[in-house]
Image (cartoon, rainbow, N blue to C red; front, side):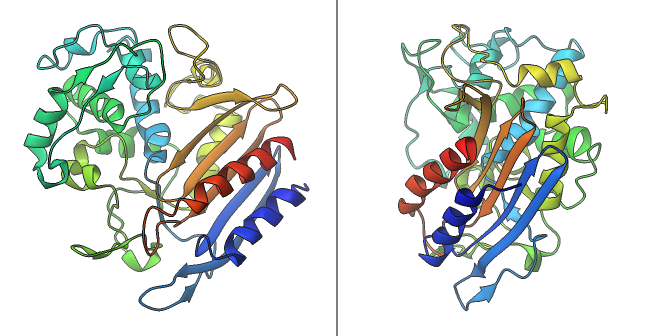
Length: 333
């Protein structure tokens, strides 16, 4: 295993203090390389990243790790169809044209601004989301939105009677043996801090995403905390799927195909999908806090990257270009 240029870019990211630290894993078939570089936090005092089993706020990785498998499992069980109108499950929603497939591929066209969103309570936020509008972009453009996956969580709850975060724990985390993963870490000291906020203090083991903080167990777009070892288990399952009771290997294979109605908008179920310079298919998903996963199924290669790029302060736009360069390096290294 080499990935020499990719590893150099990770070291540069830390040495240039664009992020405090990075925990990573590079998977190449049966080979595995893990590493820890830099610091766990800078405030209120600098602490180093001592090992690779720290717990990270995964942010939007929650979508693909948890919510996507739950929804696809319900589809395999015949409890929903991905081309169902979401109005079948969310009767307060006014646009029956929007389907579960649209939500999964971020092609729903859901648009709109919610005034004072972060000051709303649980019920009022859900009501406001269900009163959003759609644009002409439905089925024509990919517009990434957390709302899509919040709705998927509400649909799963409507069908099962169980909140989405509990479904993720029961139907994904436990079957895969992801014992360090949860939505409410018990040992906050094992967690890598994210933002230092004016109203909530330093967030450590507490979800950064404001919508997830409000919706709690009903949020299917963010909120999951996990470790590198657990994410390696998850990624290895996608690379070499087994009949473990989550979803069938055949359905896992569909994650590596464009699932939009037009079939050419670069979205699978939850994941972004593309091809590298050699024409090899890959999928990837990132999280606002500074996390991402990239998988190349044909070569059985994957890259798990965990950082707290919003510590001590968001948004840290310098990170975004560096992330692109690191992902491009892995895809073509």
